[in-house]
Image (tube, rainbow over the protein chains, first blue to last red):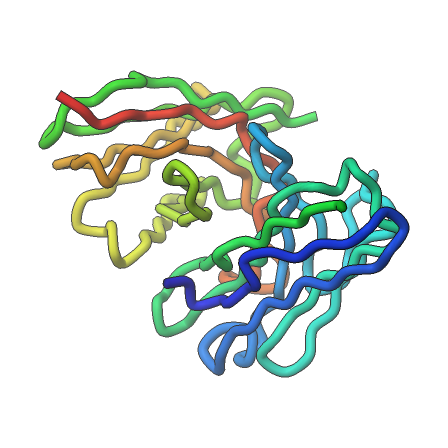
Amino acid sequence: QSVLTQPPSVSGAPGQRVTISCTGSSSNIGAGYDVHWYQQLPGTAPKLLIYDNTNRPSGVPDRFSGSKSGASGSLAITGLQAEDEADYYCQSYDSNLSGWVFGGGTKLTVL
Amino acid sequence: QLQLQESGPGLVEPSETLSLTCTASGDSISSSSYYWGWIRQSPGRGLEWIASIYEGGSTYYNPSLKSRVTISVASSKNQFSLHLRSVTVADTAVYYCARQKIVGGSFYSFFDNWGQGTLVTVSS
């Protein structure tokens, strides 16, 4: 059971917008620790997608955006493309667990 | 451009020690801006942070694994290593090494560069 809660799956048609939530608590996101997002394409290593809540590394399309409010973070993907079909994970730090934590992951299906 | 490569045995017997090494190329692991960490992913499951180390020697461990894990760094070889003792089948996973960017404070950190991962199976 992850301390960061994500929906197991989301789906959308090409061109649509989807959002993935990451719900934490007062010991992690709610304590002010940043939310980071990773994309894991099938059979590959995770790749940093969003860091420090809202920032995109070089090379990540601006179709991907992140936000944070209170004890939750959110990843939005606009203009869905088939190549976006992947697993997405959020990550933060938890002061109660004294360690870095990941959400359980969300599988995005492009219909 | 940093590249990370995990190496180690793909099969470990129960109760033995799992030992993996991560070799960095294209950047020095002596950089003061980064931790160096290990993350694993059990088959069909999510990501689990295992341990991280700062080149200066500070170490951080997942409390659920702390009693069995040691992380170390060999700066002269640009490598860092993971040792997980007394393994069971539950430790079967893909193990990733990763660079961990430190931002504005010790625990404000994210994994900005990952190795390709190595599958370790625990079985007799």
